[in-house]
Length: 337
Ligand SMILES: Cc1cc2nc3c(=O)[nH]c(=O)nc-3n(C[C@H](O)[C@H](O)[C@H](O)COP(=O)(O)OP(=O)(O)OC[C@H]3O[C@@H](n4cnc5c(N)ncnc54)[C@H](O)[C@@H]3O)c2cc1C
Image: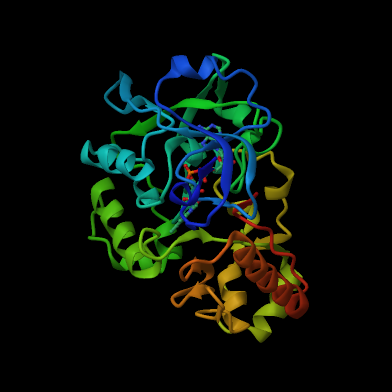
């Protein structure tokens, strides 16, 4: 048995019956059927509430190479075990654009594709060309079915495909939509008048450092819930109660799957779960060894020695409180095991 505490950013104890670290592709074929196994990146999106009675495969596959380069674009293949933030910094140092807003998100490249990570108006699904898996087949962007914090790897292919590498298409000219700067007020204030991928990544890093805990010193998995979608009518009612409640029209969200029925409805808006929790007094609230971060009510932290079950109970209380007050069912963003 192996204690998984060093392998999840909540730092909770849970024991895996079997555990291996995978650093070369050839060993992957020896593992056989992965159906009951857990593939682990950094464990930045997972809450263990119990022991794992099967095999945990910690992904350490490393390497990146430029596959193709033109005057406008560059295609890069990155091994799934590479650190996400290091990949972002490497890209912006090369002045390649497309990932700069996703700086400082903890995790691996494989984990980023699974969860279609997003921040400040950018999502990783927008720049993924292909995802390669252990069966040798690649999935095209379309086949990955990226949507809001979601992909086929969380659904039909869950525990059925080991992502070995991801092929990204990055741009040699600035590839950030100019208009979102006005929506993300906080980002704009940190930017020079002519932003580059590097200055955007620096601005994002500054804001995130100020707003979010460092999981290495204050264990956390970031936001515990997704931002909910509500009808415009519901939003208007809420906005009367909750000062400065923002909203984002769902049909304007930039996701590479515009056909997705969820995102096609002009009737729905996305609202910040953090603001709802704020209003209900959850920011900085502590129960036993679990709390929300004092600068962000959506971010749950382990104050030291909390078990996965204690964190889970805390998260359930948050959910219940929002449900009672606003009739909104918050959906977990973290994976609860
Ligand atoms: C402080 C903090 C801030 C955060 N901020 C953000 C944010 O702004 N935006 C955002 O979107 N997320 C954010 N997150 C969440 C987290 O960083 C992302 O979900 C990240 O992509 C998780 O990557 P990981 O490698 O740790 O995946 P893990 O947590 O290890 O795994 C997540 C899931 O992916 C599967 N998986 C992982 N690797 C593979 C693979 N190679 N093949 C197949 N399946 C695999 C796992 O089995 C699991 O189901 C934050 C987390 C923290 C701690």
